[in-house]
Length: 152
Image 1 (cartoon, rainbow, N blue to C red):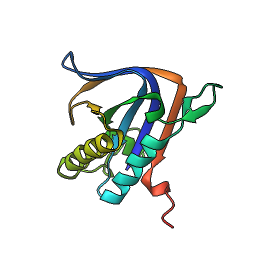
Image 2: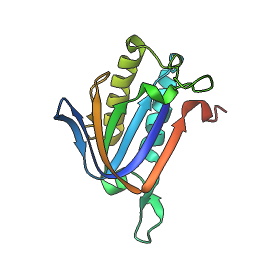
Image 3: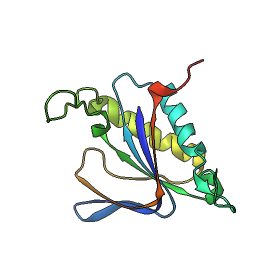
């Protein structure tokens, strides 16, 4: 499982011109899911996202987490995070999970993030042609991958 976190002052997702999800300060999270991802990967990543201390404190240092600023999350499914680009100029997405695996994992991530934050998670629509607008704050952009975690 791979996530790209962007610290934002605002973000929204539109499908066919209609807003499906919108937030103020917080994280825009692009989430990619692989076939071999597990519930443990999901829980680890959800805790990592919500615990990431990249929001400014009173001294301007990145010391605050999402809850400390009462921030929100806009979660967008993003299979292209697993693009393989070694050969040629057309990316392969063979590593990305198919919808029968990805949709339940995406829905579980929404529920897990809601359970952790106690807040509604704003979303796009899985598989839709989404238009994402954001005002990146910093900019602060962080890439996380569950294969990078320490399993010991």
